[in-house]
Length: 136
Image (cartoon, rainbow, N blue to C red; front, top):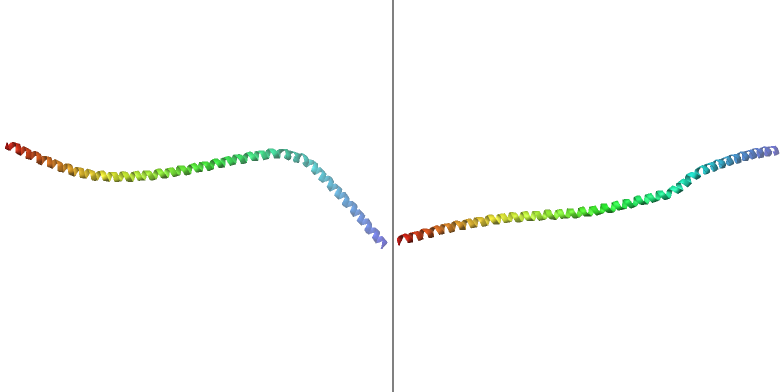
C-alpha cells in the first residue's frame, strides 16, 4: 500500500507540475495579448473624445434639421389654411357674382319693360300733341 501511495503521490506531483507549467504558459500568453492590446486601447481612448464630439455635433445638426422641418410643417399648415380660406372666399365671391348677375338680369328686364312703357307713353303723348297742333 505504501508503494501505491508513493506512485499516487508521484503521479499527483507530475500532474501538478504539468498544471503549473500550463498555467504559467497561459499567463505568459495573456501577458503578451495585454501588451499587444495596450496601444490599441490607448488609441481608442484618444479617439473616443473625438468620436463623442463628432456624435454631439451630428446630434446637434439633427436637432436643428428636425426643428427646421417642424417650422416648415407649421408654415405648410398655415399656407394650407390660407389657401383653404382663399378657396372659400373665391366660392363666396363666385356665389355673389352669380346672384349679382341674376339681379342684373332682373333689373335689366324690369328696366327694359319700363323703357318700353316710357317709349309707348312718349309716342302717345307726341301723337296727342301733334294732333292738337294740327287742329289749331
